[in-house]
Length: 235
Length: 254
Image (tube, chains in turn brown, green):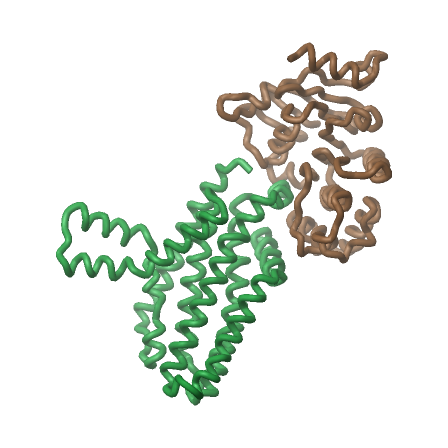
């Protein structure tokens, strides 16, 4: 379970995340909000890239930035950047070494299996500098899986992918769900949320407006319509 | 410790794939070999060959250290590659130290390449095995390691361009602070002016401690005490710079 308790992040006296309190224990949870709503800031705080001004984030009862908690998570940043002179396979190994699993037998096969799953196996020995935007997104996703995490935090994972790529990545997410892992997904694309998420959290100007099942939120209407209504009401 | 080694190893691997670094090293090696030509034509005396070679190695290593120190760490932050690293069970201190040791490893390799070229040229010019020259190169390496630590320190709070400016300024000041204080004493400077010179002397690294090129050229052995003091000074200064860098980096919003 992931628990956010009174999470607040303040920049120059402005709360970009404002007293955010939530407990999540569903297979796929989607943070939904406009650009600048605070989704990325929350995700960065989860993995320790930013420090909260106030509040806590606990994963299975431990602070999310504890080493014990970090070994159980995978994170894909928004618009991932890489070491251009590394190959895809080398990058996987590097991430695995940092996660502490490299060196055990069968790791190369493990990386290759993940790269096949995300569809860039053929480019595994090519330098990342030669990868397209879509391939970079896929590699960003792949490295998040390298330590076989219990929790996956994906920041806009479907950005930059073509329709086929989006479909494939969503299928990967649903496969991961079947393995019993938990996925947190940041997105501003409503269609993706409807398709893969069990529950959503609607965030607007750093505040949580709604958290719960998608169907309860839509109440028979289109997600887009309900989202616009909710955001307009809060503005 | 394992994470520091992983990051250091990765830094080494990536930097030696950088074409700019290759360019500098190839040019430096050519420069050292060019001495053979000069030795025959102009530099008739062995000390001249040694002086020319050691200064060349120093100059090119300084360019390499400046290039590595001011770009590598900053680029990882600026291009957000660090997001991947720090989302793993890796502390910011481990990342920073890994980058530092990785860059030092690159410098070890470039220094070894240039040292081998230098020793070959000196032997060719009839100087045999130049052990003191090798010691001078090792001392230069210490200075460059300090240089890298300073560049990383500046990179924790400023841009790559400013890091080049600040690090170059410290390089310059580091070589004049010792003569500055002697000159101040010689002309009997006092009051606030002398205090300011003293501040410069104690704040900036005294890089002259690592310059034993003249001793090596004239085959004068470096006293062991001076050697030990220089090593301890470099280690202490580097530890201080890295400590402050980690402190700043821990507070930095990335």
